Structures are given as structure tokens and as C-alpha cells.
Amino acid sequence: MEAKNLKNVGYVQDVIDTELMNKLKETVNSIKENLKEQKSFAGNLVGNIRQQYVFDHHRDEIEQLAIKLAQYHDDVYDCSAWIDDSFGRLTLGSLWINFQVAGEFNPIHKHPGVYSFVIWVEMPFTYENEKIYGPGFASNSNKAGAFEFVYTNVYGQLMSHHIPADKSFEGNIILFPSKLNHTVYPFFTDSGYRISISGNLFRKI
Image (cartoon, rainbow, N blue to C red; front, top):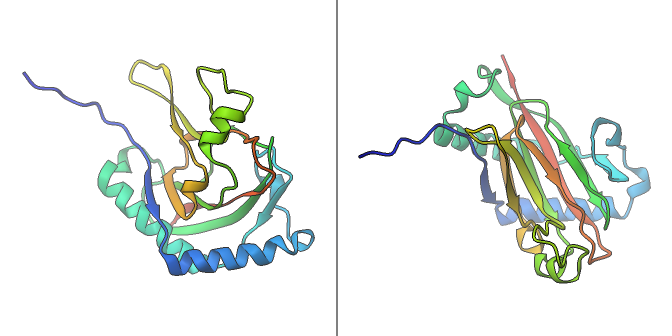
């Protein structure tokens, strides 16, 4: 008797090295002090978030990190059969930064490109507080503050993968195929900014 798995694809996660993370935090703190001077990126995004800006900093280092994760993802999942644009050199497209406050959210969406990533820089809330004090405290599906992937299984049924991205996720990065639908639920229990940097990798021939 032998079990045979049907092929599927996931995401990869890593902790950003301290040197780069310190640079990102320093830049983000500088941006935070001059939000009115930042160039809006909101018109390019589906986010129901007021403050979404172009992030043109540390591009080379972020690109190198994202490509490294993409190569690891390829090694694990062999994505050539899953991605239409499977040839050419990976290169970084636009970068943007979100300053999300309580009640704001990202509806379900996907990205252009081959791979997408999220860097969690500053997360003001804890998942435990959201579970206890958020509006879903009595729900059997409390997702306040979570990042979630949405996909279909081999039966065509809708599935989800829940990531409780709270304060403990600061300094983490995830990378995933850009066509993978995902959403970010609102948080409610803190008045601070939930700050993340995102971008897409494309293939350039």
C-alpha cells in the first residue's frame, strides 16, 4: 500500500537578518515623521487603507532577499509547471509600504508578476488580544488581524490558510506565487500602525 500526494504549491517564510531589518526600521521611522510628503501608491492597490505609499529604499537588498526566497520556493515546489512566465531573470518591480490602522483591511486579491512578498515591519497588536477583545471574540472563525491565503483543493472546494501575523511576526518575510489569492483582515485592539512593505518579482528576458 502506498500513498501518492497530488502536487500543490505553498509559500515560504524567513526572518530578515538584523542588519537589514534595522535599516528598514530606521527608514520607516523617518517616513512616519513625514507622511504628508510621501508619494501615494493607493491607486495601484485594492487595499481599503488610506496610507499606502511608494517605497523606493533598500531596493537592491530587498531584491536579493526576495530572489533568494524565490529560488528556495522553486527548489521546494518546482513551480515551472505552475507559472506561465517561467523563463528569464527575476527582477524586482514596484515596492510599496502600508500604514494600516484599526478597521482598515485588504480584500481578497492577487498580484501581477511571478512572486510576491510581504515584510512585516511593525505590528502593534497581539493575536491573543484580538481573540479576546476583538468583535469576533464569540465567533468560531475569529480572524481579526490575520493574513490569509485562499485557494481551491483537489475537489474544487474553497480552502484557506490562516497566518496570525501579529507583533511576534515583526521582522518576518513571506514569499508566495503572485497568483495566489490572499486577504488581510482588520485589527481592532490597538491605535498604532500596522506597517508592512510589499513587492512583486517579475521575469525579465
